[in-house]
Image (cartoon, rainbow, N blue to C red; front, side, top):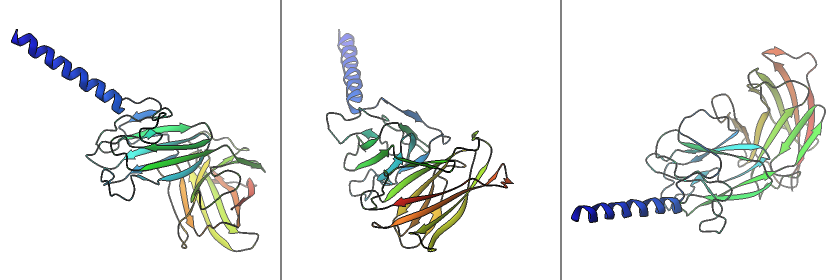
Length: 274
């Protein structure tokens, strides 16, 4: 008799624990969950070391991004030994987790969750375990076409630097085949207004992919880094981008498969700020 009471008690305990985990969001609803560092994502967001602490300045970094529709974002759990989630919506909102939900990300190195933003709009998200920080992804279907290029603009047609201090551009050439393996080198020059005041110029090489280039209005000194992953993902340019101006972005295809292009594709794109 005692044995059966004990077994029933254990069974109920496990059942309640299982129900509790379901309510807590342990099971991923939409997206993909991995524990390997290889990914086809376009953009990386970090769950930073110390994110579990309530007084941490950030939980996710960057906490606010603006990307073109179709961008795949990967969140990496870099807060070792701490489980986290990436759950859409605000904490305890009726629609919490309805857009995407990683479930509990393992407290181990290289744990990440990825999701593709195929619809425009602003998507808030948080961690179910540590719900004191809300981050956001803004997805835009705005784009520019001209001279053999299509450029997706994460902020919308006009970049409001105050609302979106970061904007991702998807620079997609339409006149050369992109096979995902053959190296393509782009030359990007950015100037303010219609002057010769060049802020930035650099070559970028992708593995047969469009160039994903994020502009960041965070500091006076102009710097660049990337890509986010070993050979893929977004590059980032930081400069004194400001509202009430415009920026001339000159893009050229310099080489394909490490061979210089005789008549390079070129586009001059103007990004206005407000």
